[in-house]
Length: 365
Image (cartoon, rainbow, N blue to C red):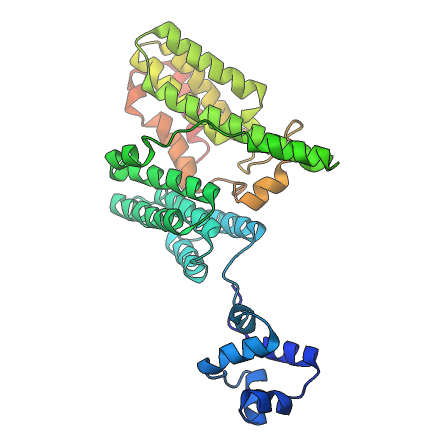
């Protein structure tokens, strides 16, 4: 947000009207010296004069004061990516301070509040203090509640509701049921209508980009939902195999290991855990080997498109969903801990294949 800068507005608008400081002073009812002080930032107009000044120049009070309560999508995306990357470079407290400064300045910019709430959640996952992590989750939840109650944008409200429920999972699961229990509705294919409109107006590149974004979101949503489905486990081994195999087929078909490796890494661990619980060590080891290969390989942690999704990079940047290029050290440590010190895999500690996996994972930190 720009700081209050009445001087610039007064100078610009006075010159546009072609009047002198004395003429402006006579109209407002002050001395020409007062106008001069406003323009040289030695003083500000009396608060009671601001509406009169704004009306005279035919501008809003916000424009007169140089106040910008909203940020563009692109600027929000840039700020989110910068703060997310700062989690790897600075202390978490410093990043949180910068995050809260942005929240305070743009408290009515609801798209920004959504992104800053997500950043608070990510920061909470990096702190060792469970009380602090819980407090950050609660702080993020308050932002989402504000957005849900104050915004008049249906899509923003829907996102805020989902994020509020995400925060409520560790805080109060019953609240999630109250929030979402009756809200699941068939998805409306907005991107299809929008792409059709673009095609009909010969805006073919925008039509293609719109469909790619819709497909990307749908595929990622499907992978994340299937990963959650995997974690439930099943007494029917064939049914569980089918779920895992179909999910992995989608991963391969859409190159998800390159597009969003974190989603695939979570899937591998979830499925390996269930296989261990059913004493199928062979399949568990196979998934853990794929996990280690992906986690230690030359992968980009910055979300981006590929040869199929070749028109979504600008959307990822503008939407703030393309974070840093390298993971925070705490994230790397978490990748290691998920295998090396996971009690689920203790039974594999004498297995040569598992020992090789552990060695490979330990090398990344």
